[in-house]
Length: 500
Image 1: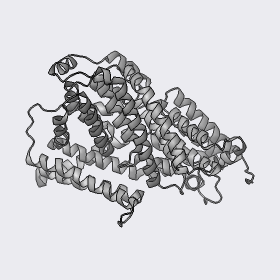
Image 2 (image 1 turned 90 degrees about the vertical axis):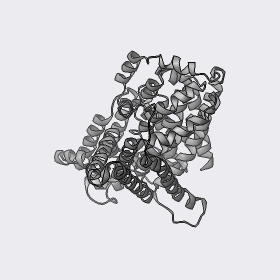
Image 3 (image 1 turned 135 degrees about the vertical axis):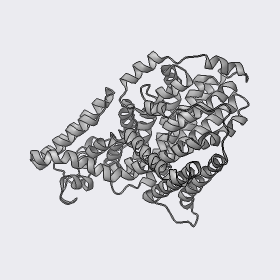
Image 4 (image 1 turned 30 degrees about the vertical axis):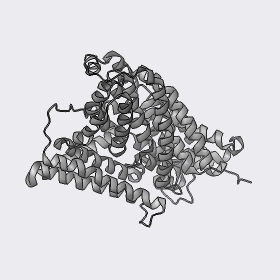
């Protein structure tokens, strides 16, 4: 028998805020403003003081910033590393050898998916899309893979499969776990999100290949000539971009660089083109092998992020030294780090006030916002879920798909990450009530949010950039991927509920 829960004005204000944020997302608008206003109303209801309510607006974002700053730091350092590799042209050299194995459209499909996935896993799809588009996309088209199919492969492998797990950088699982509560570990969410993302992605890629298999042509340089003569539908892209609320497409466009036709990469570029994958391969091995039972120290969420960020920083210093020399590298390295933080806050800064509001749903983080102890501070969302327990279906499949759908709704604004505080908080509250692991529910909600808003199902997301680079209509790209991605999400959600 569940204990009676006392619902007060702060609970109703929190519920009103959640509803307002969801409605705002449905209308494809940015949710920062309703998040701030909802935080103010909850603070006013809880403290009974206008001064306290105004202070809670700042404190909520500040608490979120403290909880999530390691995520911003990892993004900044990884971006700084990529910028240093671009100067050496080592990033192009890391990818260019894969062009040689694109002998036909089918091999082009596989190579494009594999390389996009790996690059996006380590550097995020936003910088990966321009790199793949400059180096591998023309080779795949010349091998006989149609531009529309090529764009779908890039979006599914990068913005869907790699970003939805975000296994290496750890932004998405970090946000989901922190919102779900102290009992949920980011590493657990990351592991389960990785499995679900692979299931979803492999199914989506398989179904997409089945749909486009009849359009694959024999290799010919004429395919590339015809493709290069195309112009992307800029009017359509501009119209859709105006409807969106997230600037990842513009961020991706800003990182575009053309591959030099006869680029001579120096010895330093060749060194770091080899050294960088080796270093991060070792890091991933140290993250994964202990979980497979090998006698190695287990890296927790914070330890793994520290190892990734530290490795990125040291590689960045080495690459900058090799390019600039000892004296100039002091200034250039600082510029790379600054550019990395600019990118991190442009890409993720709007998440802070959103996460700050949803952190009010858990007693531990709410206490940090309002002051006092966690024991005396209500867990607003958890209390609401317990009060509504009689109306919550205890069928695990229904609950799993419910969290998935909530995640997909939050992705409608074209962001992907802005809904993770909600799906994480909802999973932490629902899981114990229905007998499901909150980490599994958080991973399922993460799939719905990122696959939808990250750039596979929503035309006004960074999918615009993929369509622009591939010179194909973005709405046709959405139509091609819609059924494969939805089938993949349905299968992965069902298996996720049954497995865990």
